[in-house]
Image 1 (cartoon, rainbow, N blue to C red):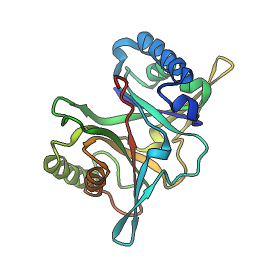
Image 2: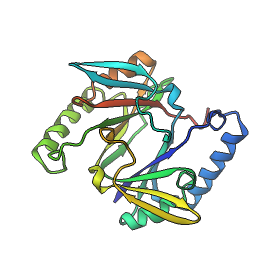
Image 3: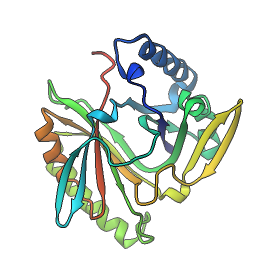
Length: 240
């Protein structure tokens, strides 16, 4: 089973600066985690600060573009991992070693599907994570007619924009999620999602775009009905 681990925490401008010692120290902590987790890690990305985010939200029939994120939460997503584990207990045992579990929180959500292929990434492009946030209709569950209809819509989008899509996945509903915090060496577990009501993440894409205008055009084409929000976050390029 594959689980998405969303890493929540408070933002630090110093830790977000790739030239700072704080950034190097944080990367060292995550390198130690990667050495521990080994082949259980299927994928993972660090995200640039929310000040560089772009949000798209429905207003009437239009999608309005706004700089930054729309959530007022003090703890925001700073990165993610995709983990392979036999079950939730196995995923928790791996995720408890994440630095974010000690400093903030880790939301574990089982993935319905996940794929990643960056072989066709255009030269000079910027990678973005697109987080699909919104309400969760009770009918929107794997295997239902509503779910299958949404799958068909996303398949059309993925075919049309295949050159720009580097990966993505859909998530099981938020009531299958678990929020993990490590406090005093002990795991504190909460069922459900870390997100506020109406902001639940239902899926994500990894996208490549040459500039901001292109990434906004791509995001506007992602199938998602009102009152959905698409949050675009540039991905940190560790080699750069």
